[in-house]
Length: 191
Image (cartoon, rainbow, N blue to C red; front, side):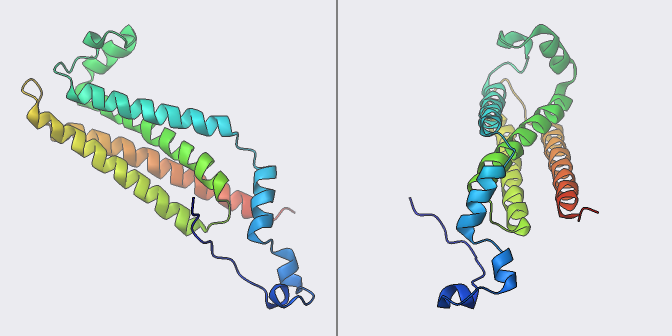
């Protein structure tokens, strides 16, 4: 499988075989950084796969509950009674917590598995990838509501879309705030 090229600053001394400059000696190569990141990375891989499983299950459930004839959670049979009762009582608002959980699980899976496999990337690129992930989920959530136009016993409601998008936005903004604070804390020199 072809892996895209990574941007690496080359020190002329490394290329020519001369003694490396002080700056180059302190800057690890891509291979060194990859090895160091995977050796010291505290994020467990199993958590990334668990978050991926939650993401996939969440998408499957979103599709299931969108395309079925009955919008009641209680009639699904496998939803715990207390959750079905709450979801059915809260109508469109139930999309908000569902999409907060789904978006958070997707971002967690991406963060653990994607950044673990490519530790040497710029923050700007990672933020852009997260934005594309969230934009894709936003399109999917809106598309799922549009599917209900073709189901005779269901109806399209803008409130469903807005609550879904609000859940996605809250999770994404919370994630970005957390990552910004964590990055600043990592970059802060110890005294």
